[in-house]
Image (cartoon, rainbow, N blue to C red; front, side, top):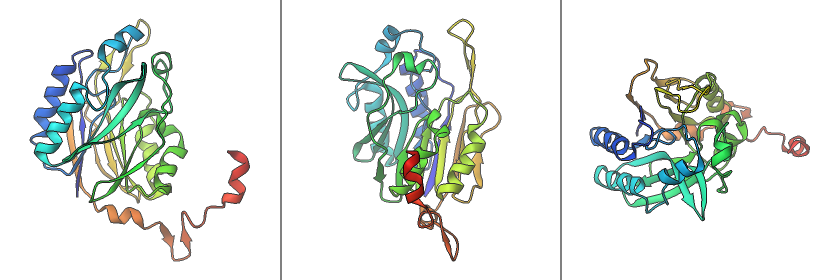
Length: 265
């Protein structure tokens, strides 16, 4: 299958324009699965809860979600995208999965980063794996990368591909995802954004680009590194993620010593 990321440069608060720009590109992409950044439609640096309230949407009936569903149906592909969600009067940093038959699922970010803790609620959805026919995929969002349990749980549940919408500002994630893929034998698609947001005095955020697709053996199949909007595409075989053997006598899941791990949880 052909897997892709779209590294974007959203303008804060210009949701309609940001979505339409992404859709115009999606219609030109030949891929089965594409991953978009965290908060792809709104921008990242919210200043207040009232500002969040103006830009969140309900899922799946929200405008941006519906536009992605339309595109997925028309192009017959699967899209993972990060957006700000309103559910039961609470706000979540969420990732959605849509496909040729419409809305499929949602993940709400568990590990909130910095000022996200002021405006968003810790996610209440479990890590879940979705079968999209050609692969089994799981979702996590940005700062989740720092917690190895996130990818491990998805891998144990059978994920072949980890879809990872992001707005990365710390420099370590692109290299860390190599390790996450190696220790779980999975593919990962990290879709980051570019640009600078300095809407809060003294809190300038520079996004690091470096969106990437990484293979189960840790090889970087595609990485954006020029601080430009970019679509990255790689041909992958998800079946390779189902082989968890390192040697004829070592299997990364069968070799886990669970009885020694329990006291640590």
